[in-house]
Amino acid sequence: MAYFDKIKEKFEKLKQKQDIIVLSIESSCDETSIAVVKNGREVLSNIIATQIEIHRRFGGVVPEVASRNHILAISNVYEEALNVAGIKAEQIDAVAVTYGAGLMGALLVGVNFAKGLAYSLAVPLIAVSHVHGHIAANYISHKDLVPPFICLMVSGGHTAILKVEDYNKFDMLGTTVDDAIGEAFDKVARVIGLPYPGGPEIDKLAKEGKNIYKFTVADSLKNTYNFSFSGIKTEVVNLVHNFIQRKEEYNRADIACSFQESVTSELASKVVRACKNSGQNNLVVAGGVGANSRLKEKLQALCEENNLTFFSPALKYCTDNAAMIGSMAYYMIRDGRGLAELDLTAKPNVEFGTIK
Ligand code: KG4
Ligand code: ZN
Image (cartoon, rainbow, N blue to C red; front, side):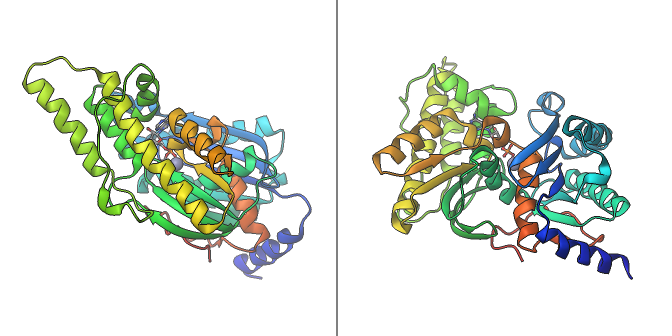
């Protein structure tokens, strides 16, 4: 029997298996991560080799440097993931990998490693969207969370409000018309002289500042679930440049606080409106910016006011990690989706919609 026919048969059988152990791989940006996840919610290991220190001196991720460092790290991360989980490679039921969205060269390292591993073990290879993985991070942190719910997806590359109808059914209600929110955090941080990645730095510094600059967010999108962050980003850049030109001192904490206040209000109010208008009582946040303390505070308060329940992943599952990919892969396997052939390639952009 041809190789892929055999794998298809295994994949069909796997759907029915009582316990499913997935080894998952994430390399879309600057973290090389491999996890072992049992039944979608039990994390046996989640190893993350971060490159943050390497990219910091460049002020942001340098794609080629990221790819090279993934290559250097991935074999050791794999060994450690198996060791910490206390399993042998033969116990892996499926290999899952982020195939997009992300940096092409970085993704290819994970995808190729996954293909080699899946082939050598003769197990199904599951192609997982990074965005869907971020949402699934919540299943790890909240064992009783089940769809449907409304999700605010906020990361370095994505900003969206989604209706998660089922584990594999996503309806996009709104997205950004220009920059992603994480990009805006990182850019504003850079302009006021904070190191990469800027989001957590702004979060910290904003606690010492006051909301004195009334930065604006696009009014034309008021009645939609869409976002625009390029205007506010430019406002901050211009404000800082004017201070510099006039050789005036400025308070970085006030700028960080004012920026954070206005964007978090915009995100929180729109996603709560989406919950109310669609009759959904569960609000879930996903992605790196979901780690923002002020955003979580506002979402929690608005949820209490509106009788909604708020869910956010534990901090370690908020930013990029492979456990979230393993969790998502489990629900894809149970539903008979995501089986990839060995010609799988990486994609810099992927659709948010329903998985085929
Ligand atoms: O999800 P993620 O780790 O990677 C992508 O998929 O992009 O998100 C990274 C983004 C970066 O822009 C980073 O600055 C931002 O998440 N971030 C934060 C915080 N922690 C990470 N932004 C605001 N506040 C934070 N505490
Ligand atoms: Zn991410």
